Image 1 (cartoon, rainbow, N blue to C red):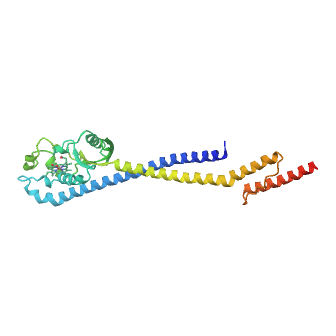
Image 2 (cartoon, protein in one colour):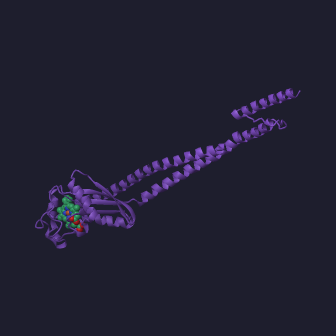
Image 3 (cartoon, helix red, strand yellow):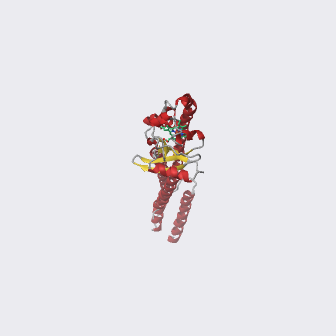
Length: 290
Ligand code: HEC
């Protein structure tokens, strides 16, 4: 195998190993970054929903507290305002969703679907869990969902959610007395489920991998071209000239000019010793001839 081929083979192997290792590490790092970014988005959406709930519970509900038997305004219910505000948010960011899902909800729109019920049941079975996470494949790509338990921790909730006879009459006029009742103190009745798309993060991770791959390929191309140029100039060319001259000398033809490679590297000193050897051989041959 030629020297150049050997060098190039070693460099190409290093390039392939480098690409493999870099793609693996980049993929892992990109996945981690993407997940952190999505977790951050989920936290923002949830915190915003909790803020709307808090505002409604402390700023709006008390204003109407005395009138609930004659007039019941869903707008004064934290769950209603949080989800209504989110609906406006969703007009701009349709890939995100926020739902206050329950197994036995007051508003049928809040009824948990299959996968939501599964998350709620996991939270019900494991009351110590602060959240559960799932990744679902949808027609719009992968979606990351986090469910935070809704636990009944205040007696005040039971007024509207335990026995219909305790609930404001005006509320029963709007919602039925068939659902959203029978909730128990300490029970996990549902979950705040926040969903964020993974498609954008997946695409960013892929873009990053492509950029890093291209950079590595570009760097290796430069290295391979430089190594080949240096190999030609410093080693291959002088060695092939010397090999041609030694071929002639070995046939007894001393007519070729002496070749001296400038510089003080190993090939230069080889060319000098080669010339000395050639001169010695020349004198020895002349002596023999005499
Ligand atoms: C004055 C009555 C009232 C009180 C008190 C009340 N809720 Fe509700 N709750 C409602 C109504 C009405 C709805 C349905 C709102 C809608 O249309 O989205 C609701 C909806 C919910 C939902 C969404 C699921 C569903 O049933 O539709 C959750 C979760 C919830 N409430 C939890 C609580 C918690 C926790 C408390 C106590 C901190 C509480 N509620 C106190 C009336 C009440």
